[in-house]
Amino acid sequence: MEKEFEGKTALVTGGSRGIGRAVCLDLAQSGAKVAVNFTLNASAAEKTVEMIRNQGGEAFAVRADVSRPVEVQSMVSQVEETHGPVNLLVTSAGIVRRESHETLTYEIWKEIMEVNMDGTFLPVMALKDGMLERGFGRIVCIASIAGLRPRPNNIAYSASKAGVIGFVRSCSEALAPKIRINCLAPGLIETEMISTLDPEKRKAMIQATPIPRTGTPKEMSNVVHFLLSEKASFVTGQTYVADGGRVTLP
Ligand SMILES: NC(=O)c1ccc[n+]([C@@H]2O[C@H](COP(=O)([O-])OP(=O)(O)OC[C@H]3O[C@@H](n4cnc5c(N)ncnc54)[C@H](OP(=O)(O)O)[C@@H]3O)[C@@H](O)[C@H]2O)c1
Image 1 (cartoon, rainbow, N blue to C red):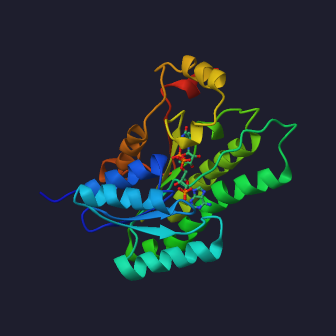
Image 2 (image 1 turned 90 degrees about the horizontal axis):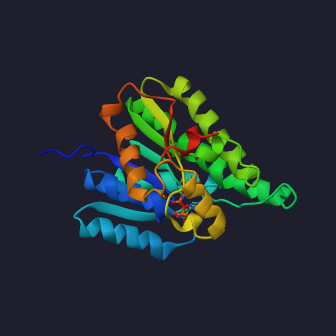
């Protein structure tokens, strides 16, 4: 039986770890050739590639800092020259710095904006023309519930994720119908990103979640899979929240 993403090439930014790794594993299992992007952690990217190959899939690691235009362009050229046109893009690369308004500096603000916003903008812009020419593209950008509700101790991160949501909404109209582009807004997900969270804060966040636990990367890749698939054929420009119900709370 043909697998759902057979014959497709996928690029997953931040595919070396966390949610991005789960997305890589899922897409490869569904038949896609997967380019696993990383920036610093080559061994984590190789681990993702190894996990995919062990399950019989096809994958390769590709280094690029997604906040750098030249590196993103060169990553896209490298992937497309070797493995063919990219049909599926997932932007999962991201960073968080939890700063209060007293400690937030312009440098930290810039760094977060560059990785989270430029790092979404650049891969989408590098791939959209090819997708439009070929008449097919499916994109999911990982935002956060921080982009949908106030985060007083996470102002820059929240602003960057709200920016991603706005970017996707406008792109969806500009690029339809050939390209569908949506956001996933995760809640608290068990990855290295939340390992530095204050234990008391973490406990309070879980207690405030109707499904009172952290989510798993696999639960996120399930939603990404749906949004990339033809089961979501009439869905574009949307932000799909997967947070155990927390965003709905006051
Ligand atoms: N975990 C959560 O609770 C949560 C909640 C809401 C939203 N999110 C969002 O989900 C996405 C994935 O988060 P995660 O939890 O999986 O994080 P993670 O485990 O910390 O992994 C971050 C990934 O981003 C990559 N990355 C960071 N900066 C990069 C850059 N400049 N260029 C290319 N790659 C870069 C890392 O690559 P290296 O391995 O090379 O460092 C790594 O693959 C992020 O956008 C995050 O904001 C996460």
